[in-house]
Length: 208
Image (cartoon, rainbow, N blue to C red):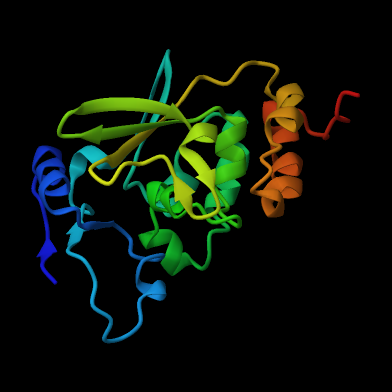
């Protein structure tokens, strides 16, 4: 079971194309599902790729690197409309999990209990995928296709999430956006957190 540690994204994409390894970063989802002694595929560790880390913002929106941890998201100076995402980041397991677990790992795992999915759906996140053949973007609602299933091809790597600048009426949109059929466990919390995020000190009732 070779353990592959690429130095660049380009090298990682070639390894994905040629060897079809299992991609890991924080390993908080991969390791618990493995039984001791089980044989497995090659492992591709992308934790050290700087192009997959960090949070940047600009007039067109925000970019969150795929290997950015939940602890980094919770501490980031994001706009108020992102408060639900920051609170979800602070509730992903214990602090040890938040320090290791990554945003892309949470999405690729596609668990119905994924804490980060409801607020990211509200924020209309797009998933950027890269392969040796090129890059593409998918809306998060199209990327997750079912329980434990995504649209990521075997030779693709999630490199970033892209979020548009939130509108000024984000609080009005949140109840309608946060209705994923596969992620009901986080729905109530997502609505409660998203409503006050436009700066109001009191939650407003959902439009009828």
